[in-house]
Amino acid sequence: MNAIDDLIRLLKKLPGMGEKSASRLAYHLIKTDDSYNKALGTAIAEIKDRIHPCPICGCYTDQEICQYCSSETRDKTLLCVVEEPQDVLSIASSGAYNGLFHVLGGAINPLDGIGPESLSFPSLIKRIEDGSFKEIIIATNPTEEGDTTALYIRHLLKGKEGILLTRPAAGLPIGGDLGYADKLTLARSMKGRIRL
Amino acid sequence: MNAIDDLIRLLKKLPGMGEKSASRLAYHLIKTDDSYNKALGTAIAEIKDRIHPCPICGCYTDQEICQYCSSETRDKTLLCVVEEPQDVLSIASSGAYNGLFHVLGGAINPLDGIGPESLSFPSLIKRIEDGSFKEIIIATNPTEEGDTTALYIRHLLKGKEGILLTRPAAGLPIGGDLGYADKLTLARSMKGRIRL
Image (cartoon, rainbow over all chains, first blue to last red; front, side, top):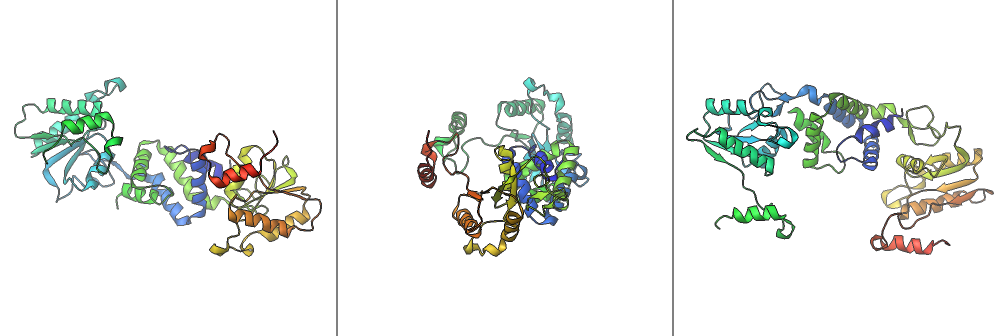
């Protein structure tokens, strides 16, 4: 098997990569600096050896405990619950949140056979009982599954006094155009309108 | 440096890859089969060690002589001259050409400092003099640089009798829409119209 065909065949399996873009990428790699190829190749080959889920929050880390859980400067009274590990990165890099995280590992979706028992609710409850959280931000996706999961968490935490449960605002994306917003987003943004 | 940040930083250097798509790709790799990551990583890291330009035609190969030049079944009276190694793959996989190839290594472009001396014209001439080609298809790109290069080859081969010089037809892309074609393409396609 030809080395280039081999590379193209592997690249083609990446999401959103067609025949043309895979071959363009392969020829790009042939033209670039070999040390970059070596670094990228090694990073891809070793990524699953180098990282694992943080035993506390569930986000991916190459340390024993992740950078968020082990941080001295983050606000330990705030907990943000998300569906997937990559959501941690998105929220952390928004710069608007400085608390801790908890990764559920998905959202409740009975049609796909994902019930509450598949998600990390027991460790969430334990962290809330052991910790000193004042606010739990349920940042599951603004989808039916994410909303269901948020309601389920509210149900789980019923009776826990002194903890504020919140959910990030849903509405028009900043820089967006009213004309391009879908009906559901527009309806949510009208219902959730705030005083100027 | 975090292993994921590291991978995202490297992926972001690929063409057409922004912050978002790089991080999406990184998390995709974390979720996929490790043996695939190992295969892809190795293929990327080793691609420049495994391939080199064919000493005859200049396309990339992992054999001593490329699959086209060493083929027993390809038509040795046809030579297709292209700008870049990847053009060989495009034309070969179109299924409409079964001759040999010659890679120039670019097109004449005085503004970018690429004169005829930077391209593989000497080996082209030698191959034509030594070979038994009946037709040379000059498949440089249908751009100003590609057209200039084609004219230069015609000039180089002046006086060589019995060799047909051709150029692939330029015109409307198949499946395209007249309304979306740019003026130059439309003009070429009208000028080069063929009898039905």
